[in-house]
Length: 239
Image (cartoon, rainbow, N blue to C red; front, side, top):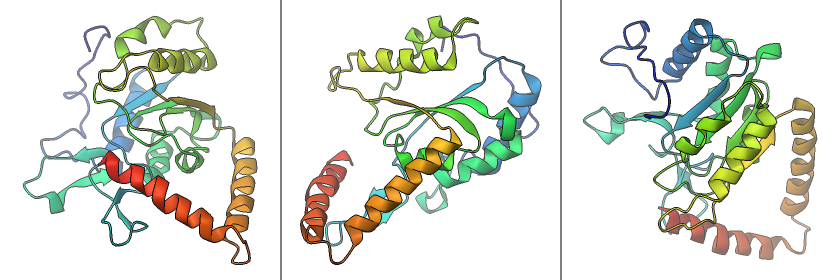
């Protein structure tokens, strides 16, 4: 992007080769390790922009709407192959391996992870990141093809801006961006991934799940019918 100062690291980063696979979690780990050791900063933010489908993958077909498959609509897909069968991509539960490899863990967590990807702003994804990332910025809905309006983010990069203020400002920028075909109804979630909060959230979700899935729950039939009709109906239209 012309409004940022970009640095070409291809000659310095030995892991970047002609056959470099962007869908390999080790490639992401090597990039993060290189950046973490090569550049110094008070706050470290990682943005990944490609495709996303959330942890559920994509809908397989109409016969069984609860059956899904993973696809190239996942993180960092490698499209440089002659056959779709040979394509590779990164899954959400693999991300901690890359962050661990790069040293973003313990007291040295990444300050903010921004996923400019469709359908990645869910609690399932956030939970996977709790040991490696302090704050999370992602959308639970589809991202317009143009992606985040990065030119409006430039002014946020200053020493006086906290990660909290940065994330809140990003939400405001995105919500007010007028995308063609989407208007201004854009959802972006900014959240703290404090491990104690995430564990409490896990307990609450598990309790709700146990209640909803209880065979003696008189509302179970209606709940499943609602999910099938509304959630997977919207999911089908998204693809």
